[in-house]
Length: 87
Image (cartoon, rainbow, N blue to C red; front, side):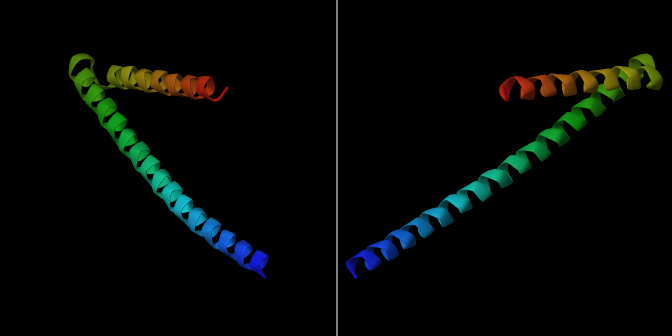
C-alpha cells in the first residue's frame, strides 16, 4: 500500500514539474517569436531607409539594386551563421 502511495506522490510531483516546465517553454518560444518579428521589422525599416537614402543619391533603379544586394548579403550571412552554429 505504501508503494502505491509513493508512486502516486511521485507522479503528482512529476506532473507539476512537467506543467511548470511546459509553461516556461511556451513563454520562451513566444518571446523568441516576438524577438524575431521585431528584428524583421527593424531590418525591413533599415533597408527601407537605405533605399530612400540611396534613391536620393543614385535614383530608384540603382537604389533598388544596392538595397537588394545588401539584403541578399545579410541573408547569406545569417544562413552561414546558422549553418556554422548547427554543425
